Image 1 (cartoon, rainbow, N blue to C red):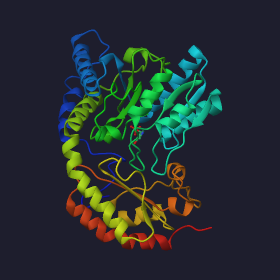
Image 2: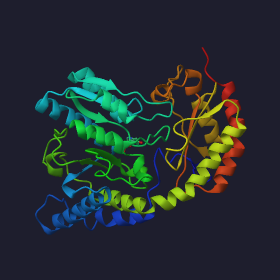
Image 3: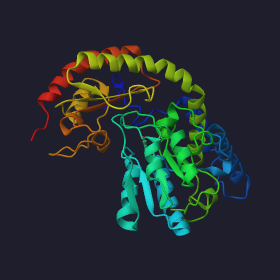
Length: 390
Ligand SMILES: *Cc1c(COP(=O)(O)O)cnc(C)c1O
């Protein structure tokens, strides 16, 4: 299949690898292929690259290098944070309750659900407002000596809402409870400072910020109890065994450096495009609503629901028309399920099933937005005729 003439508007799903990142990775596949655990010069070269990458990531988020752990991606980082801290803190303190938001990525919510159903943890879910934001006062009301860990997403992948992580971090710190945040979406557009925001654990995934797929970071504040989930040769300070993927780790660090250096210029270019898109969609399409926060949202993120539309059909119609976007509802044959995030922000089923997410990025041009806006109203109408009804 040819994607050459297609317009990509799904940067929250994944991003193309920046050519500068590809160039930085290249030498570590062939010439400098050593195992960083080896004693000889081949190993030393790999280890130097590994530790340089660790240093670079640490510096950007205001951490120290020994608090940076490389993983296979956002999902693994989320799993390690939740499972590792839950098990270690319960053993240490008896705390057995997990406090999470209802708008987490499945890497958090499904992991928390498994910890509850298979490992006897209590799972408590925070309320969110209609924009999907967690109120720090609600964390304050629910947190206590039985809380093993709090996990709140930094910026939401489905609705773009940015949470007040710094204020939530303060509440957790006062109570002595570790705060984890999934910053996989946030990393491409927001400065990240684990000191200023009082974050104890933070997940990153390179492919959401123009790095390669299959590599991520878990930041763990020194002194945070955490049990390794993957055991073996003791790499990554014993927290994550397995020979490190050096080219990908080098790529992650390079992509993170470039992205974080360019966040302001990227946001300045994309915000007007995003706002034009949001404004015109709401103006030209009946029974349309923006999901997520109108202002506290990712600069590249526009997400909508259309009453009585079929989100999956809409994405398919747009794909045929040459635009790649996504919908929140799970594609189950016969009986579509509205997204848990859209349900959590209080949307009725008929609205939640008609969701559409458009996420912009480095390749997006004003002409793309114009062409998309010309196509969308007709496709929404058609998808309304196709909606699944009871
Ligand atoms: C993409 C994503 C993940 C999963 O990251 P992978 O690197 O794809 O495993 C987790 N959380 C959020 C918010 C994401 O957007």
